[in-house]
Length: 169
Ligand code: S3P
Image 1 (cartoon, helix red, strand yellow):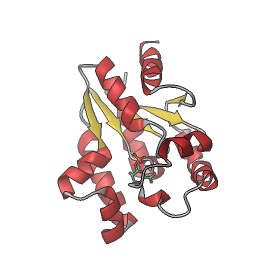
Image 2 (cartoon, helix red, strand yellow):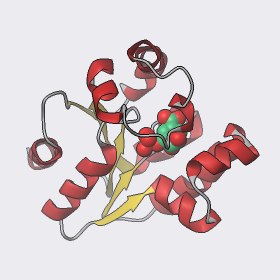
Image 3 (cartoon, protein in one colour):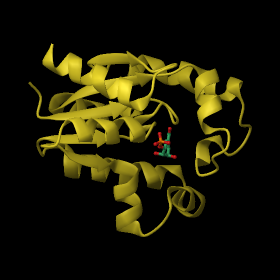
């Protein structure tokens, strides 16, 4: 059994809320949210980092944080939606974590995040089509996860229970 659990998937696929539910069901695990760790150590919001320093700089900070946590144990690691695109990130995450891809349809993601404003990659041209485009581009990598869980029409608690079932099964 791998030492950690990592959640990947598109923005709005429920990584943060599912990881919180999962950590209630797994009290011995430590919950780590990579975006929050970046915000804590830079004292800046993700959107501000994108705006001031650009995406490549954000990706460097993201890899740094992944490296910092991935070699630990008993952690639930909630990744940013783009973290699994990078080959090096993917390699170290897959080596050290049971990776769960939270899959959601573009329509469901649109519904979940239409009232949020903090996601720089969706700030412009926000639409179901734009979300579908990103999913299409990223799915070959998301699908390299160990487990794929469909999240449409499920609560974060339902999804967390399903993950637990996979772990115990
Ligand atoms: C990103 C997703 C965001 C955050 C950053 C980039 C992406 O995290 O890491 O805005 O490339 O999909 P969430 O998936 O938690 O929104």
